[in-house]
Amino acid sequence: MLDAEVAIVGAGAAGLSLAHRLAHPASGARSVTAVLVDAPPGPLRPPSRTWCFWEQGPGPYDEALTATWRQLRVHTPDGRVAADDITPLTYKMLRSDDFERLVARDLARSDDVRRLEATVETVDGIAGGAEICGRTRQGRPLTVRARWVFDSRPLGSLPAARSTLLQHFHGWFVRTDRPVFDPGTVELMDFRVPQPPQGLAFGYVLPTGRHEALVEYTEFSGAVLPREAYDTALRRYAEDVLRLGHFEVTSTETGVIPMTDARFARRSAPSVFRIGAAGGATRPSTGYTFSAVQRQTRAVADALRKGRHPMPPPAHSARSRAMDAVMLRALDSGRVDGAAFFARLFSHVPMGRLLRFLDGTTRLHEDLSLGIHTPVLPMLRSAAELSWLPRRPFPGP
Image (cartoon, rainbow, N blue to C red; front, side, top):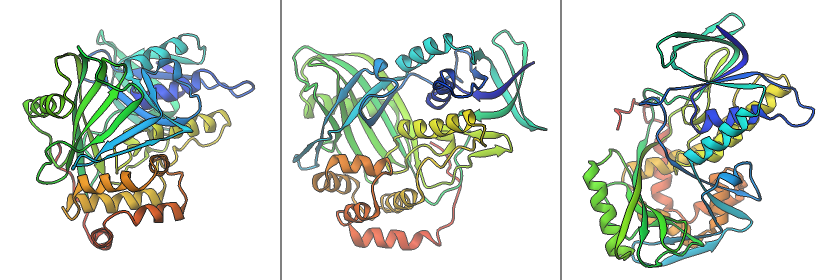
């Protein structure tokens, strides 16, 4: 049996971020002993993925970034272009394998954080803390006791909600024969793709060079598509819209992100907390998660070092969640055209302000000025009905 002040379950973005923050305390800060319990290679370990986020100035993971940009571009359904420079913000691309290598290197230099491989079977509250029971890759039982446990594993099912959409996507990392990409500009949303009967669809291009990029097809809708449907949509987007010419697909990525107004419990026992997407870090209106994970884990690490109660703070403000709930209801009910909704926002609101809104750092008057560029009557109707809509379980992807 192992004992530690803190145990972290799961080594996705949230688990690795918290372990990394605890591994190297600031000068003079209290050290915190921690155990990071990661699933062995297999179906319980998170697949490789790409995270994008934005921040001002240098960040703690800059040396692991694949690329950065200051210029964002949106194509409206009728082909018009909205482009903007987001300085002083920088849009950053981080691949999970590179992030894990950076964190693993720094954990290896730490005397405070230990990393173990085990399949966690139970996490239970006990007197004075919590107990984790699992099995190593060799099948041996493992028990870890800690004063505080932070569980970042995905939930088995979503909490009940009034509105839930899925952001589901498939992407190709491509290499082209011709220099067709602008490495200084992200195609954040390209609505020049066929739109589904309900919800919205768009292309997304993250160029890493003149010949290389991640090209994705994304939908916001109630259900995922068959795999071949994504490939067909991507092929059409790459050939007919982007006109890439001959290209090679070097690797792929696929994901499903719930966009929901569900209430996520941040505590499952007196000393057991949920962090990351399982703790509500995903922004309901967009699916972005990484920045909220950083805010959440920073607050937890600071509390632990100061000897305070480390309850994770809400990932997003009450005002942000309320506005997102209205938008989700408007999209889910079909009252607004999703592609037109986002295209209008990006065409009329500076992109830097939109990014600050998504981070929850805009002021009330800025949120109100953003709201006037949305379909006011459908949004008001959606807001009015939220108070009496029941919360229902989501049947799943």
